[in-house]
Length: 163
Length: 163
DNA sequence: TACAAATGATTTGAGTTCAAATTATATGGT
DNA sequence: ACCATATAATTTGAACTCAAATCATTTGTA
Image 1 (cartoon, protein in one colour):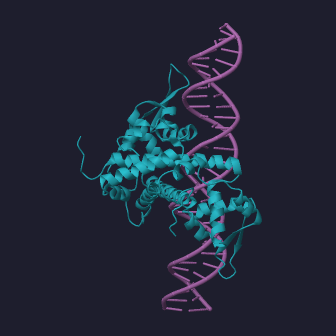
Image 2 (tube, helix red, strand yellow):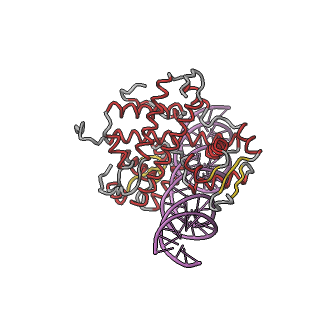
Image 3 (cartoon, rainbow over the protein chains, first blue to last red):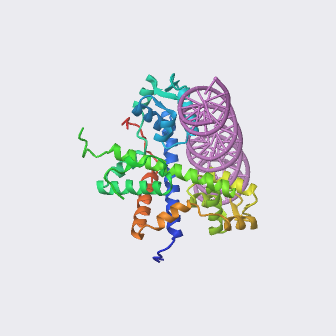
């Protein structure tokens, strides 16, 4: 079945789509498991981390940081605020902007949180040769790029791993 | 801190997670665009294709084929049946099983459907050297494998190794 | 000054996704 | 035959996701 056609190759494209679906599903399932274990979903943990790592930060920036739409971000922030893990406050200078910061409870929750990707994945991935790890990350990044995510400030992603 | 070789490399893992989020987002956005253009979402199209390619087929098989949970599959099948593109019928021998098939309208809809991944992606991906294409597909597959083979069972994600 | 355009956050509406519980049917063991 | 277990589909409940519309505020321009 190995025809090496140089033009469009729908079969290859289909493979890509298929792999993406498998990855998405695996992540979803993992997310449910984490949720059951810690009471926080993966997106919630991601945002919590982003707030911790960036200090008081606007919603706009958080959305970019986490590759989420503003709409999605707000719903997650609503949940986190509802749980008392995050505090939102309007900037007094520019009253359109809203800054989020962790509460003490938020810090605590984050410290007790599990790794965001399945432990088994971490183990397997870490046991690959560093070179292979870089290849995989580069490939994922390339796919994201080609899919048009480009939009973002793409610079920092490619530290010494040229495609 | 020199954590060069202690095994785990959180930074790399984080890169992977980040890339996956970007891919997921790109696919979501693409899906919305397709929906607006065709009136069918990407998952709906995927299932439609799977039915066409597999003939009358059980829900269980469809779920596996598309890497979706049974629950998700049913809701999509509900939508497709509601639109008159798919027909479900119980097997008379094994009355637990339900077979889906395309209606004439379903065939038509599928013939007019656009490629499932953004045209821009197809162009870019197809213009890569075949070898690079294979590399990327292999990398995606490897990630799916490492994530998915979760084989669940007993993998308590406890011991609070924080991220 | 006044008013339009831009910006930031939010709400609304529709869809997807999963686990867990439920319903219906089949199969295997006693 | 009878009942326990297994299998297939479905329902239920809770999150996530986005685009588009909306509200509030700021900035730029006539």
